[in-house]
Length: 246
Image 1 (cartoon, rainbow, N blue to C red):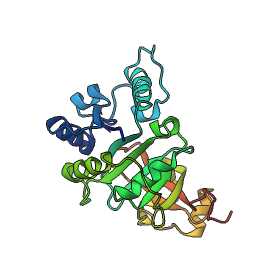
Image 2 (tube, rainbow, N blue to C red):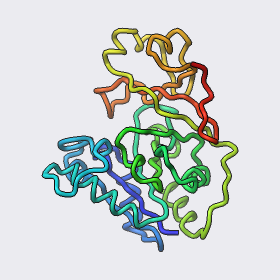
Image 3 (cartoon, rainbow, N blue to C red):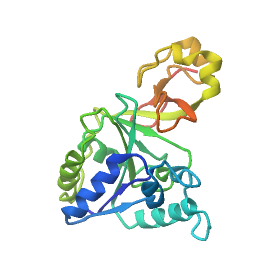
Image 4 (cartoon, rainbow, N blue to C red):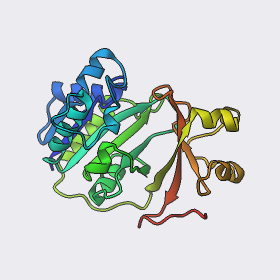
């Protein structure tokens, strides 16, 4: 099983960069690695011109670095069975994986084998929307999983498998439905409501934000994305059906 590990999609998120460097130091058969946004990594910033993980499918002829790089990464990803794209968040208890709407079920199975308990379907222009074999792994900086050695070992074990047996019983699935703006924060006093990751907001607040209830927060006041206040999710079942009431 051929695996590609992507680090540094956002240049100031350290885990993926460290994992790539570890595989470069100790290569593993069937596992290749790539640093996604080398200019942003060098500058220790999220992106240079435009957010790389909002630039897919990209444009190979673009003069904008991130748009060109997105096209290159998408083309590269198609050569592998599994692609793991690593990210960090300052927010505690936010460990999860992101996939696209048309995700290959092999990716959901891989997520459970790697130890993730939650998967989020995203439809904005991230790599997952266009690469059905890609799992973006979001790990809190304070998490016990924020260790390159942990992922090196788990990915190495996964690479030796010839097939993945479905085991999704304990996998919680969500859909990203709303990006909370800084204006929302001020308008509704969200900074006073003590929102916690994957804990449902109250019914009245969901109604004010015009999202189906129950809705679950994620990335609240993340320092990596200060231009947004966070996001909201709805839960879905394993067949992709909604579990909320309008």
